[in-house]
Figure 1 (cartoon, one colour):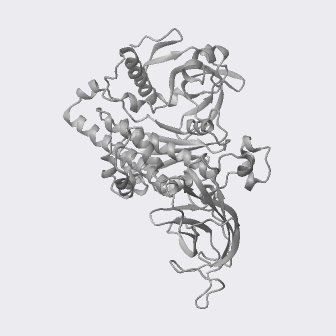
Figure 2 (tube, rainbow, N blue to C red):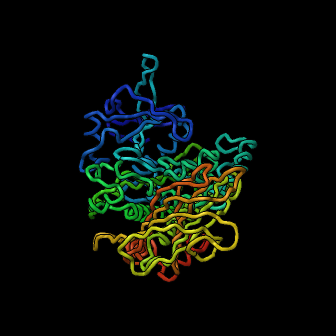
Figure 3 (cartoon, helix red, strand yellow):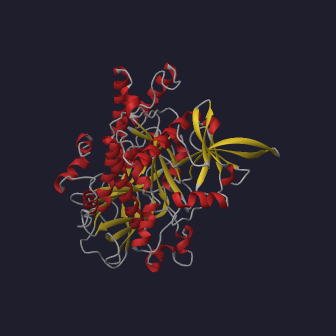
Length: 557
């Protein structure tokens, strides 16, 4: 048994030994927040003065901790998870006491789990009467953030196994079928939850089952939406409320633009995912973490003034965690060695599924960064492609326009209405002489110079999709159009997406996208190499990123 300080003690339940936390550290009673993802309710926790003093030094900033730093999860619906969290405390404390990490390389990997204090007994008021609730005390991911965007990735090619943690053959088979219809079997992960969705995603949800829509998205699609800040209004940002003219406020207030925030967020996301991949590969103890998740998140409501200190604040709000341990076990090296040969082989198989999913997620994130934020020579052209959204089938092509972009950015804005053409056809002015009209689209294009020596971005093209007119009918009587904005150069390509306009042949978007041009080309690789995370040569890096077989990427770890 672990001997904890007076404020924490071990107590025996049906689940085994749990760490008890003194309820004096939290205000009582507590309020129910609801259910997130699974079936376990969450409760709002507030630290008392005594609690702030107790936990401020370990978890706060300069000894100061927010009163809402922690959140409570109903233990009665999370019994399967508490054993996992208790083992993480055991391993962490053993490492601290021994001064050496002789744990099969697990400590660094377990550093990505949620902060867990133990279990506290508090009261909830139900119909005027107090009802005791036993709550797991976890880090509150929403604490101190303006607006959290949070992705929940279910990891592994297979997310269930027969007779594992109470999963019957029928239920495991059903889950296996679900895995086959989602991105799990394609890339080793699937998007299970998405908090703080951009308008693009919410505009698709009424047309299809929201959950199935998420589960079928591939890595590039998910990361496109993860970084999508084009619809975030400046007036939601506390630091900008005194400024005027929403479209120009970032320039006037000298705060980070949306592209700059997205670059910082993705740079930090890639760095942490690469470290997680490396930690998983370094672990000498194969685990069976069926149905567990990886969380990616950041604050989409913060565009702070441009400086080194505020860049660090953006980075510190990036979330990369592993969680959801209801059907997972945590084996120590000693416990793994005691398993039979067949059991060890089973753990190794599922651990490979897990690592492959982590590696593919980190490769996808690195590839997105490379394509969106490593082009220092400028974009050759943009394509605005109008598509008809179909919930159950492939989306229908409606028309596109491809425009060259000058190497030397123009200082003026130009606005023009362009006829939509077939795929790959050059743009023309006026209506095509032959063939049925596909309609037209109005665009505004301008260039913005970033402040020198204060950004990794040289500047960015701003592309506004104003509206389209006289689009073709692709459904029975109308269409559900949206636009893809595709930026291309010799070695780089990435795309962004507008919202879906339901049942409209003359949609109005008024949505602006930024196409950043990097100050220098190798920011990501340089930082990964300087920190010792990767040692690959620059000329090989891009080839590895573009190799859909992730074996070359995995070999880096």
